[in-house]
Length: 99
Image 1 (spheres, rainbow, N blue to C red):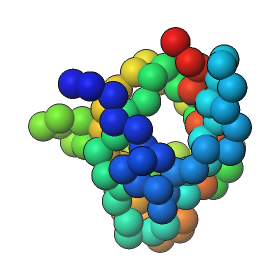
Image 2 (image 1 turned 90 degrees about the horizontal axis):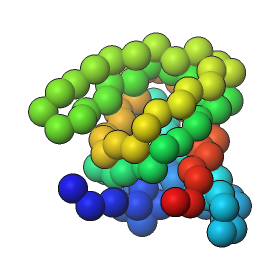
Image 3 (image 1 turned 45 degrees about the vertical axis):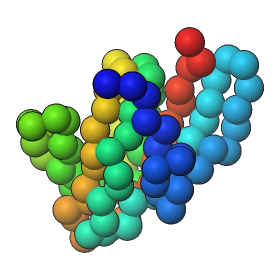
C-alpha cells in the first residue's frame, strides 16, 4: 500500500507544525466520538499531551488501547484508522523522520 498523508486526508485532525529536510512534526487532535480517515505514518514517535481510549483499525484487524496523558510511543511505518471511543479529546504531537 502506498503512503497516505494524514494531513491531506484528515485535515481537521492533523496539521503540520514543523517541517524540514530531516523531520516533520504533526499536531493531532481527535475529539471524543470522532474517527479519522485511513492514513499512513513512516516510523513515528508520538507524545500524547492528552491521551484517551482508542480503537485502531489496521487492515482487517481491530485493537483497543487506553493511552495515558504524557505517554510516548514509537511505532514502525504503518497505515491505519484511529477512532476516539472515549469521553475526552485526544491531543498528540507526532514526530516523523524524512526517509
